[in-house]
Image 1 (tube, helix red, strand yellow):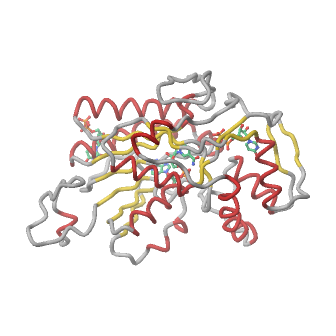
Image 2: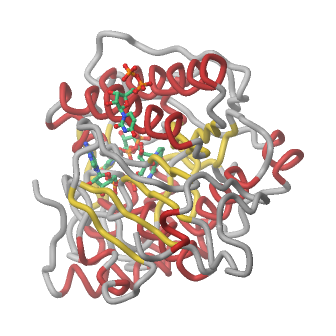
Image 3: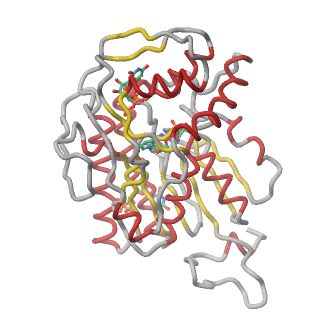
Length: 343
Ligand code: NAD
Ligand code: UDP
Ligand code: UDP
């Protein structure tokens, strides 16, 4: 309250707001929900590095204090243990809304909680954005396309989603979150931004989150077989986390609402991914086939022409460049047997 930058009410990008004359506005005030998680913590690093004030809201379901601990003591950083399903009062300029478990193992663990987080959590953050006039960015997902009948996927595609399946708490939850964002935009004039994120990997992922890149990397480091589900011919497109964070910030700062696909169009079968992991970590690693999970999308690859044209954004880091950066982090954590999350 004593700091004018925190108490001056609503000032959007480019506006001076109510900061008293003569006091230089030191940075934007930004909430990152889910900021102790994998993507959120990298976003927090970038925002703090450029001089913003960052409040992280996280319930530590899959996030870890270790991901943001290096900012403890920074007066521009604040960490609040809070569940976005409950209302909260804050005064900020921008809200990056990431809070939601992202890996299938985590979001299926308590599906009702996942859908509450997606619906009630997003509603609360939009209510907050409306009250204080903050700009709001939703991290939606390529899962809104379901098991896509269009390939690669464009933002205009409405998707092929099972509404009653085991993934529905997540993909239908995110679809509802997108609906809420658009309704707050149309009905209440909230400035919203929607990112549809494709599979992203990098340092600080939970080691045992069950996602394919984290599984393969941890398995190769532990000298265990790489578990390929199904026939391994299903595809995904893998984006390095710093590319995603650049895209999220570009989207927040641009005038376009979206939705925008943010992903790396490089498409790999799971068998090809296993080969890249073997080349990077251990060429003697073996593969073990396991049954696939229900409703697993057969292929996924973003069409990113909209983001290229309107946000001037495209990913820079290929899988073969990004994977070693993640392996360095995983090697330390796997060997120390350090584990994150509260599951
Ligand atoms: P993550 O699980 O590492 O991070 C999610 C964070 O949200 C965690 O810190 C968790 O503790 C927190 N959280 C969960 N429920 C909460 C609640 N009710 N209240 C407060 N905090 C809560 O996942 P991530 O990979 O960093 O994903 C971040 C966002 O990006 C998610 O919304 C996810 O749906 C989206 N996304 C990620 C990917 C990807 O490949 N990583 C792909 C598509 C979309
Ligand atoms: N909300 C919040 N913080 C705020 C303003 C609203 O958490 O600063 C929550 C509020 O509790 C409500 C939701 O956001 O559950 C939607 O708020 P809105 O004002 O749009 O709807 P209403 O409260 O009128 O139903
Ligand atoms: N997968 C796999 N082995 C694993 C984990 C996942 O072959 O150990 C497959 C999974 O069946 C899916 C793909 O990898 O086809 C991506 O799964 P992930 O959970 O990483 O992400 P999502 O399904 O959400 O894209």
